[in-house]
Image 1: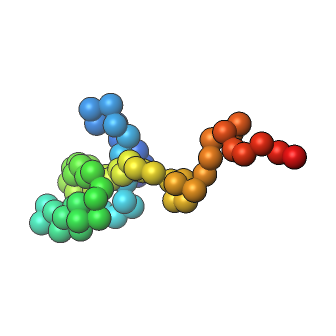
Image 2: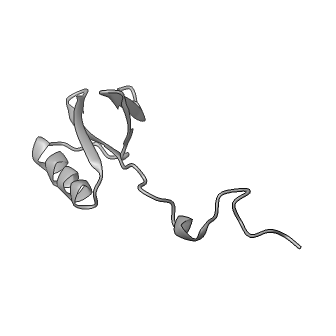
Length: 78
């Protein structure tokens, strides 16, 4: 059986496989719900009779970015 694709593109958005193969749709749905609670976008796909879960999350703001000043915008150097 060939390995599932690591990434899929759905509606122009790239999703990454979570690395698990789920025997049933119910098991995949439980995983999907957990990812959704953690604010991931989730897609379920069937591959060779098994259910796969693909996720993506858009970073809203990089950690610590609120403290960073864009290049050339900082205080003058002496």
